[in-house]
Amino acid sequence: MADYTASDFRKGLRVEIDGVPYLISEFNFVKPGKGAAIYTCRLKSLIDGGTFVRAFRSNDVLKKPDLEERTMRYSHNETDHYIFMDENYEQFTLTAEVLGNNRFFLYDDCEVRVLYHNGRAVDVTLPTFIEKEILDTEPGARGNTATNVLKPAKINGGFEIQVPLFVNQGDTIKIDTRTGEYADRVLKK
Amino acid sequence: MASPSPYHEKGRLQSLQPALIFRSRILSAIRKWFEKSGFTEVETPVRLPAPALELHIDAEPAGAGFLRTSPELHMKRLLAAGYDKIYQMGPCFRKGEWGHLHHPEYTMLEWYRANADYLDILHDTESLVTQVSHSAGSRPLPTPPWPRFTVEELYLQHAGWNPVASYSAERFEHDLVTLIEPALPRDTPVFVMDYPAAAAALSRRKPGHEAVAERFELYINGVEITNAFSELTNPDEQRLRFEHCAQERKAMGAPTYPLDEAFLAALELGMPPSGGIAMGIDRLVMVLLGATSLDEVIAFRERIERSITPRGGSSGIDAI
Image (cartoon, rainbow over all chains, first blue to last red; front, side, top):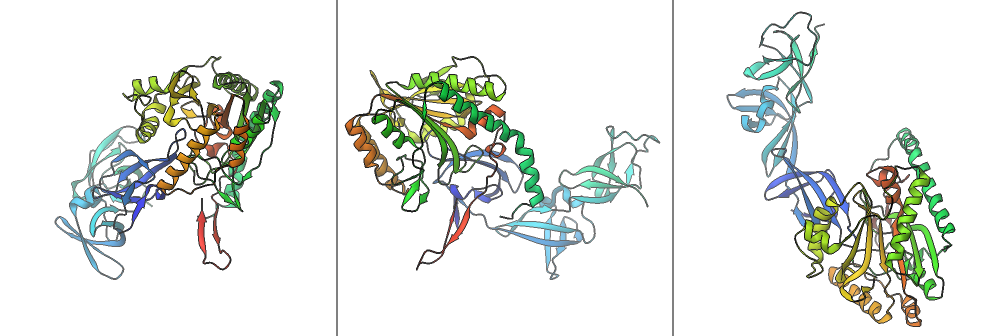
């Protein structure tokens, strides 16, 4: 596997440190005084999203991670195992652990992008906005359109999400899968 | 890289217009200050047979020579010939330098005073920057004198060691970026003075205190704007430093350049004690505007990537 030297670094490059794949989310080239180039990078873990900043010198080397991205569609689940299929009807299984809260946002035929590191699934990206029906919530005050007061509501799987007071049981809402938060109410046609 | 849409490009240039007008006022105010102060504007070659040797600066090849990384050596030849107050403002080129504070083609101002030292240049700097920021209408700077910190006191206070007593280039540069520059005051321009002799570059050692070199840098808002010296005028020491630098570059695998023998010959004949300075004009405009990236003060930052097919050779890619 080829490596990267610091002079190859740029925003958006994926690198590996101590076996963890990272994305360079911010990149800066600085040359202090009459000194050697220093490359400061913010590194974002592709596994847990945590970030940190590190300064590199031009002869520092980082590994190129073995990463592969596959697009597939959700089929069904068998308890904690979630079954997906790619366009060739090849079947893939992802665990609840890898999916995290995203498992509550899946729907039939939902298209996801799965990132594999060394052949192991490490991250799953869903469509940014998905729609879910509210299965249970306290009735809200009629006519209350305030969006800054929230109450808990349940979607399938018992996942709890904070919604504005005017959202009722049976309503469909839009969820931002990047944050797992309520985004909008979908009005019935 | 995909080209941006022509509409996006037009909008970008339109939004830059106030910054570029501000930039034009600064260039004009700089020339006025030098005229008022009795300096001669000079023009020296942009394409050189031998760039000034620096450990960490690479020159862009151009024909049989190189694009200048600084006009320093030619300006010193003028000093050696008896010119006593000279300045020049124009493009310089440094290969591969690209970042929010670096652009491979940038505008450099250099000025030199014969029979002077770095403290005379420091006073010039305070006067020039104050006058220029006032004329351009930027937020007023504090009235000089501006604070001066020695390298020794800054490192002892913020990094816990003394690079003047025992120097490590790697540690010095790393701590400069991560500990010293972030700790510099933001409410006033400051001078960082008296570098370890090992980081003297082309400055002379301080008479009576040989462990430090008479070199200063001006920082505004934590950004390095200038580098100034009491110039090294001893031809033997200059040749030794160039040769040492050439050896280190070779050991690092960096491109090697010929020595500028015409410059060394001029030093042999004698150059008066002089003070000189280089100021990054793009950065000056940036900090006076309150901007944080050169993107906000340079109209066109386009990467040049070309495919070249040398005569009779295979094709190669050259990029900056």
